[in-house]
Image (cartoon, rainbow, N blue to C red):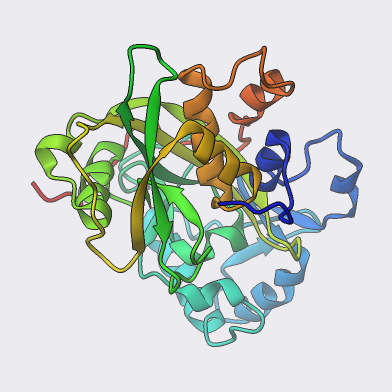
Length: 333
């Protein structure tokens, strides 16, 4: 828990840590240098200008892959379907990952693909509705819309909505991102070919050893969305997290199953809120907790001065297309 010497954050500060990319009215936007990533004539991401020389170098082949202007990067016309685009991106990333100093995010290579969607869903040029797929660790380089699921596990302590305790996970100290920080009970990125519901069941067992007959009671309760800007201001990550609640019996205790979670603790809302204010939570997980607290009347217009702004900012409108029908071709039944 927090000590008296630790920095205390306002709850809007907590949201700002997660949703850190400037809004159009923010003067900070003028100093950023991004080109728009275009697919099927539709903006789908952002690529920092510092990456352009590496793309130009990759383009030095018999058939160039990318069309580059002062403000945009798009595929050449001959790359007009899922396979050709995905293969070209994969070839380029496999070259870039050999240079971790220039592309530090690729040092956390996941061997997991994320789908990139446009408004085109023709089965002739897409796979599972996606225009292409990109290695998960590279999504921030291209600034494409990524997806995940987060599940709040809670126990009722009384009949009123706010009378609950929440299961909180401590991330493993060996995690490549946010090691040792606090997390939601279950969370995970949505690999291409997995639906939200399937991902919740999969992650519930892998992270918290929650049997499928219990995990199936998880209820989708909305989303949070935001755009992160990296500290060096060269990567952006628009993300939507699909949020689930799972009410658990008082005698059930989640237990770590893989190496990603160190332990679980059942905390009061005051304990969770205190740790959020002290910056102990992974930023997007803190926002999922705030989403829960608003819905369960732990935070109200009367007790939180930034209630309206927090409620609005937890659902940033992302400018890039989203998935309309989740592909399920990788699911095991």
